[in-house]
Image (cartoon, rainbow, N blue to C red):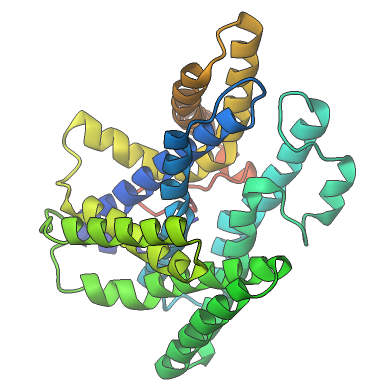
Length: 358
């Protein structure tokens, strides 16, 4: 989904810059899977969701999805001069097609196996996916609208006017957080809009003069302290004022950590980068595999808090990544673009042309 629209010569000049971007997405998708594995404990009858796990949930959810909007905005800045046709194609393949295909697949699974999936829905949910995203598909839904907004703003609005959009969105999000709960979704959308805009307009300026890899780790500690402070204030006071600062600080912390890592020459770093490259597939598939793992654990009598948590993380990360590689191998062998048909992007990840991915 992060379509940078760089040509091959540009990749040759900046391959390691894309490495840190994949690192950041890898760290982000790990947090997504950990967050869902953690919440599965609280949603499973008979298991105890401890205070420590609740604290972990609050920490992860303070920024893990805003991080992806920030990174999506940054990637969009790399291809800022793309024309309308290229933008429409990348948005369709990278956002709209995955949303439609996997929303339908997720609804089908929930209807067919209601006992294995939380929050049962009916077939009529398919008819409403253009207006009501189903569960985790909200991310693609928001991203589609936000990409269109910022693309239009980039083509038709001056930089000062775009800055004004950001300021209005910040004010709007604060106001909507103070409004009745039924308006919270507006604040939520505006916060994601802000994070994408920050990634597109502010992050390139902050990183422009810095080394693309082996960057100084000095910002990591201050950002970590600031993020912890914001999350603590948010959770202890219950004030919504700290939601956006926590989201931006946590996202900036992951970017700083990713940029402080060296080139992917070790197995761990190569694995982290591979997870980043497969982040869209992992996001779309992980809940399916985690639901299967929970069902198997329950049938075998091995279901408890730790087997569900650790098992969910392993299968949620590994099986979608393996599935994606098998699909790529199938595509190569058959000469057909299977991954694109399934809404999982095209091309080789991070080493040639950039695919549509999360």
